[in-house]
Length: 560
Image 1 (cartoon, helix red, strand yellow):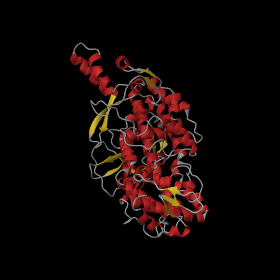
Image 2 (cartoon, helix red, strand yellow):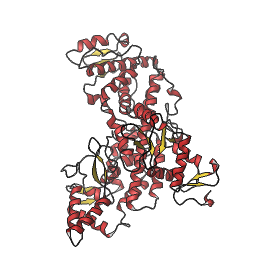
Image 3 (cartoon, helix red, strand yellow):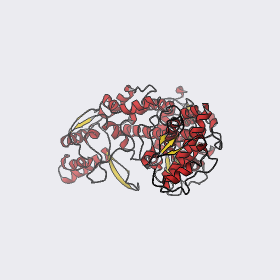
Image 4 (cartoon, one colour):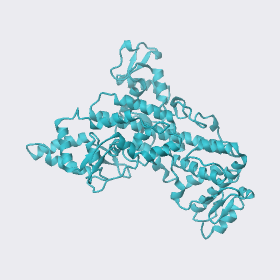
């Protein structure tokens, strides 16, 4: 591997696996009678974030308003160079009708507030930037988003491009629900509720932008073919029942009779809710599955991951998933409300985020390197992040398990050796530690300052750093916690209750499907008060079982 390879080779020959012939030769792990493997030499080679069953691409934080913009953009094409959205803002001040510059500027300001939104931008997330909304498909197809206010460059969509929607609408066989995809794109092509001023804005946009085509369902699906193919090769999406839930919920939101901007906001909010819970679910479940694999080896039986609902296989129902009810929330009041660090809304956020979501990239990297290690030890070829398959092959073959443990331990030693600038000082792993767990710790050591970008930062952009539709809140730097604001609560009532009056206890059961539960009995009462304040709770007596939750306008007795 380096000029100091002799010292590393000497260390490898002292490890338990050396007795079985597992050692290093010229930068490779050699396993008698098995393929062996090359040692990754660069940080990028160790990342291995491929997880086609979990996500279409490794996400990075970008403002939530860009989610739908990217989807519509990938559903069509512009035949020419797309200008930045700042060009449209400038054109509105010049070309909108008005008898004086002041009138045109006032009208332009009104259109700016309708067609753009603001969100936190920049690395420190403290400044705000304007983002063009996809109120009509012509806008995302014609323009690029400015990277900075008044800048001359566009930013890429690091979180998810348009592939995220076909991914979420896919079946285990790789088929996409084209009917729902058609309905989503129709939201951006329908002209029925456009005012004369709205149409004037689109006319001005057409004058300064290139010719466009689309959006079309086929275009979006074709642009997602590689993602869908990898998904099919992986055996379908992680937690297929949660995708079934998304398709059901998307139909509910599409059925809402709302003004254009409100409907687009609800679609964005729905995506944010499901992507947030998906990342938390993946972090928790994949970690439990990795723990289950570690428990196969002496010294790895910490806790009882085998008893977890989804550790062996998906339990088949979001309400019974390991995430169910673990996101203990409090209800937002619209004003400042102090929080104690011991409250479940704080402690559950810290547990899920620090112990599972934050190390999710490391969990996936460990799973992917482990699949190469099991092949190097003479095992079968596994799909990316297939921890269930890894467990099965290791549990069935004790000899393979021993060789795999030696390879994984040697990989951990090599990674620690590289992190210490090719020094064997501190490179050995503690005796008695399973090789797979040692590998996970070595990868965690190398990613402590960067792994937040693919998990926690994404979730915060989706559900925390927004004005409305929050699932996560903070009281300054003192505490971050799960909290439902009124906008998110209103959406959840619609998704859980649909068009029915639902007993309050059943409403709470429905929230568990999204991983949510009030933090304590007192919070349940505050939740009822919030629902009553929003006109979404009906009581027929003072008894708790006589409280019913309903969406707006569904409160008649004959609906019981």
